Image 1 (cartoon, rainbow, N blue to C red):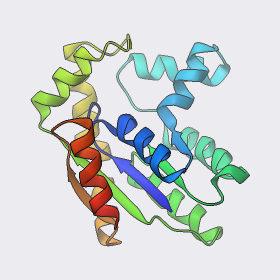
Image 2 (image 1 turned 90 degrees about the vertical axis):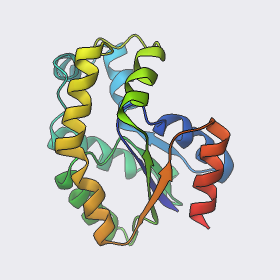
Image 3 (image 1 turned 180 degrees about the horizontal axis):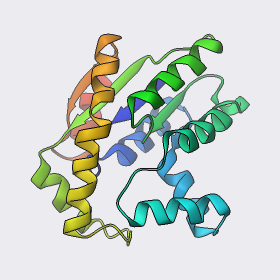
Length: 184
């Protein structure tokens, strides 16, 4: 099963992806985690990504697509994947669709977590990840970038009839119950 977990920064994508991973024994591919690992290890990609993220912008499509294609080519993804933080643009979504089609696969579920903006800002500022862009001004910029560049991905997958809208407010377990019900 190939699942995309989608939503704005702070919606709980990573938390729910981990629960899906445990429940369905699927690998979790988080572009954010891959980027953070590279930043922590000060790799060339990490340094490049850090400077982009520090300005509150998104990493260019080509860089992200190459990274994800390379990762998805590994055998551990043969039976499915939970994608978290990807695709973030329609160009990335189209590249992913093409890659999956070439490998006789498709997206089985596109789970979008809906959370009011005020709740998102509060979650991000209180989660204490220590990101350089976790301040009110940069958070609002990230949400603006999301609405302008990332939200159109939702429409791309609506056209493919893969979207399942999930109320992303409530306890972690309440949200996870909603996700499970949407899958079956």
